[in-house]
Image (cartoon, rainbow over all chains, first blue to last red; front, top):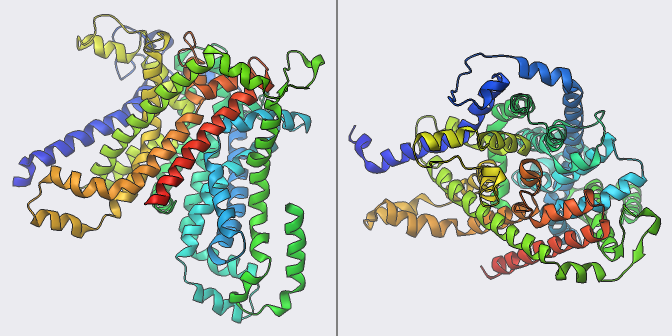
Length: 277
Length: 311
């Protein structure tokens, strides 16, 4: 009981409360604004709870913006990118983890160093090339970009995990007549499910949230993702803050759900990746 | 490169029967074959644009004057750039943006990591909550902070109510306050990443070091300075490097919250490159600016590797 009076413990709890308030308050305010009628958004007496709660902002999102279309675009882009990135990263991570060959460490360095690449340097030539190839305004442009963005980190995370799986199991399988790919698919992957989940969540979140490439590489509502659509609404001078915050809530809900469900896997995976990188 | 790997993999298929154990896998091309998909995609998105971007930066190429086509001008874009005052101004703003963001993210991220490294009831819930901003779209952070820091928004109301200020501050429409507001939004979005990295570092510090310090009579503060900080040096360098580079290349907050304004006061160099390309359509000059960013990034990475090499 005397612990409670320890000033360090008190300070810790106070700091923790402050930190959580810093993180949570913007969310509370966003949700609150999204249910307020426009004239209440910036009224003199600001209150957390809307006095005249309304669904008008959400209604507007569906009436004036093809929200379901953007949602579907985001889903398609995020899921396909995640699956492709997972396949490429698994193969690459397995290669780096299990084999010793010429150029291995330089190739590993090359893969990791692309993480540092300034995206704005890439988007200018890619815009010109994708225009020439007719890939602007297609999902393909975004698939390729997001798979590339996520490969370096995912490869590294999966390599770290594969390193922890004992080789003896695989050697036994080879002696039993498994081919090399069978070893990977039947033996290694089932043991790596936590790491695969963590990597998928990472890819999904990154692809769902990406803004710059989505904005530049899509110009029509048919393929535009949610973040790009929101950015363009603001860019065109749309200042209905209620509507924007409602759109923000709807854009963020899917990633928050994914994150809350899988955060344990993700944080463990990220932590492992961070210490090894 | 891709063709080489394809031919190597054919060789490996032919030699398959002779390979009988895992130990001999490394002798043939199978590992290259596994790497091929990742390397091809990375080449398309990172390596190819680098070469093409460098090539573009040596040309006069403006989509506003398409009839002129692409004209080779050598280093003229770079000479022009280095004579422009606006270029040095955007470099100065970039320094402000990067130092402010990295400093803030490191401070908040460190406090959060130290708190989450303690054992207490509800720790995993607290950890999940604190990490959420990392998972949400930057667009969302930008919208919420734009709403809160609106001249009529809640931040001004609270500050006025507490009598900290006597007049509302026009945060995003003032040349003095726009950048700090962007930095605050950026810190909110990005500090959880620093927390994750530092938390990993904290967990790798051996318990015995703390016990030894306690036996020597060290208090909390002494333990922090003499055990925790030295133990975190490695991950701290990584955290500083990564947050610096992420801040340097970021354009999202500038794009959404201010579009580089007011009066260019938030036009950092990455956004300068973006606007030169996609608002002014001067792709030659934009590529030159983008290449300068690439060089700055490379220099930072080079120093990091030097630093890591000496440790």
